[in-house]
Length: 67
Image (cartoon, rainbow, N blue to C red):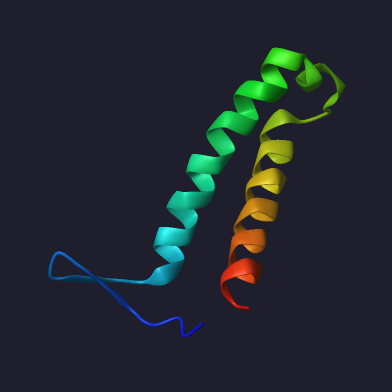
């Protein structure tokens, strides 16, 4: 895939910004599931853990789109 700017209603947007938004939308249900299952009590630092999961989701989306 060619990562070029995307024309969104006349505004050119970098594709990474759309990927970051998509990853955030994927992360929201993941956070709810982990809090519902009580997995946060096994995490040492919840903010760092959430950021690392976010980075994993972002990199997975980039790798899927780069094929």
